[in-house]
Image (cartoon, rainbow, N blue to C red; front, side, top):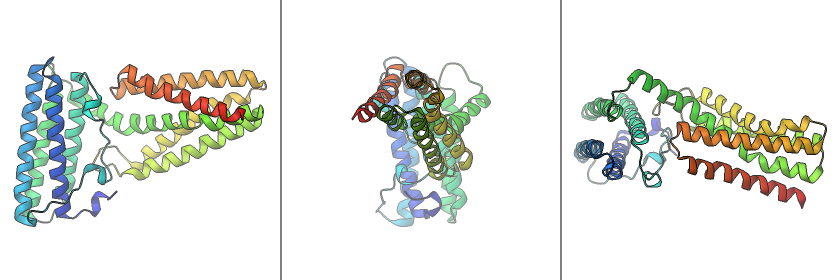
Length: 313
């Protein structure tokens, strides 16, 4: 992946064109998914789609004048700093509140991109267009916030978005990795040795190692300038601590002297961890309960069973 700072003006414009194309198609999907239950809101998303298409045309016109007809394919996933988006076709039926939240995040991210891009542009025409688009995306962000019937508290909504981006997402990623990835080595050691001390040492090593690895990976993933995800070292610390905590939760029961009591307690802790993760995904990531349970609980149980089977070999 390229860093945003390494892009030249031609590549920035190509990326902007790609972003507008993707956002327009997403808004079209929103409108199609909402038209049966929320026709008024669906029409608002069609209007947003048309405006994003207008942005694309303006970017294309400027690109042709400056750089010619060939546009390199540069996508958001090719550049560090963009938040991963869940495909719309995976979330049906669409809920209005979930759609609104995703639209807010899309516009916030695109606005930050144009602001940072305008600051780096040296060509007057490119700088002017990017600055104008940043202001228009700011208006879109407010429109997305008010697309439900009641006007929300925009300051509270902004704080909540920042909390999700800067705390919940890195914390959840760490908790999931720590809780699930350490299951197999811990329970493999437990059932292979029936020795609490050795099992505890394996659990400690796996948890702390995973915490350090995930912390560095999160801190180095992006600098937060485009996404508003905050300071990278803070996100890395949150992610690393939650990763270690997720693994230690089912490792520490092996401080108990009795092997079977320790194992039973560890299994109970695992179930609690998986349910908590599913709840967080449902509460903050707008994941349906059925999907959250299947993805987290079923996946965790499969990893657990893998560790048990390996330990019995």
